[in-house]
Length: 280
Image (cartoon, rainbow, N blue to C red):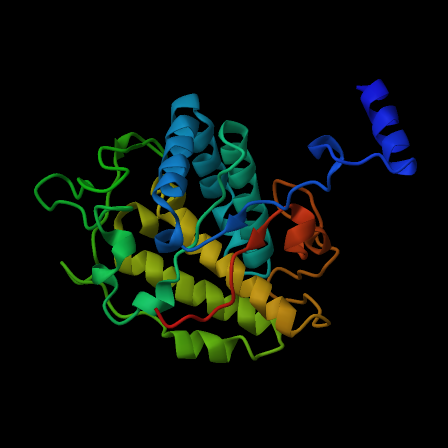
């Protein structure tokens, strides 16, 4: 290992070229919209999630979320902690397959009739649970999934309006929200809108152990994308919240990282694929 490092340094110094071994490291895989993923990318994501489930890693992550729920919701830790938590999940996925990244769901684009979203089709995460089967999800990539926190049960969804989901915040409302330079306001508004998505879909997603439903990840990932966009618009805006007395120097529950340490996504090793909003 040491010899390789020395040779690599010498090769750069003397202008040795032509081998991939000494090229710049590749950029991290981009997080992209669920429906923009290729078939191969989607299948790789599903395989990696299922492998984490088989290893017990997935349910340990769900338990961590549930255990820290009260400390990381309805306060200024919401966005910073969710970012660190998503990163934890993504790193575990990449231990299985380095090509995998967490996808996001552009849920405001589906806000008028959420139940008709492709994301909730059998091609992706599946739809509503069955009223005759304990609200178990019977279609999609995670049909037959067994949740284990706080106790064993089938993956459940129960749309708030029966077979329909109440409308969510529109893309226009979210875009307007991004204009506000106050972190405390943005953080709390985004938590409310993400909560409406989760409550509207219901079942496991509406509980304190929400990641029992793999749909949690693309919902939360879109929230992280919005925070990334907010920061790009307000790069000098301080992270300050009276709710939890959170500042850049505050340390995240469980992880111990400072809030300041999770503000730059590329330094954390990931990036997003495109600019939001998009119209289709």
